[in-house]
Image: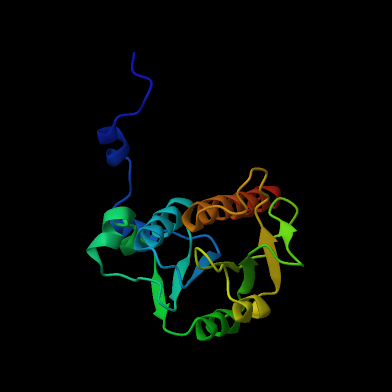
Amino acid sequence: MEIKISNDELKANRPTLKEVKQMTRLPISILVENVRSVHNVGAIFRTADGFGAEKVWLAGYTAFPPRDDLAKVALGAENSVPWEHFENPIEAGKKILSRGIKLVGIEQSIRSVPIHEYEWDFPCCFILGNEVKGVSDELLDLAEDHVEIPMFGIKQSLNVSVAGGVIGYEVARVFNQLKVSRNEY
């Protein structure tokens, strides 16, 4: 007896690109600031597609589609998740705020709250920063709150795309739990 679902079965149940574009997305987006690895950007797109993100905002020197190396990691998610690129990360942050979306910096700061203690509000956009420097001070100043992923080992941070997955799925879980508690399903 097979335990795993086959790749063909998974693909047969997957929505088409046209169907995905018609689906309601969660009121959660990601602002990616100055992420240097195109592979990390591709992985962030794939994760954003997986949890149903509304949009990916790419800023600074962060790679953006179309790029073959990005598409190789994103596996088509760069076509299913709406995205926009800004040369200036602060302009991106201000545009997000002008749409009534709360900015939350994902960073270890003097005012950060652990991910599981934070009370998420919607719509929200979480900010992921550079692999070495993190989120810039300028964007952290625009963010209403700062949230961190607690680290218990010898390393003080996760890979940016992994952090995006941890945060994205936690925020999606909280949003869906709120919908259930309000009988909005």
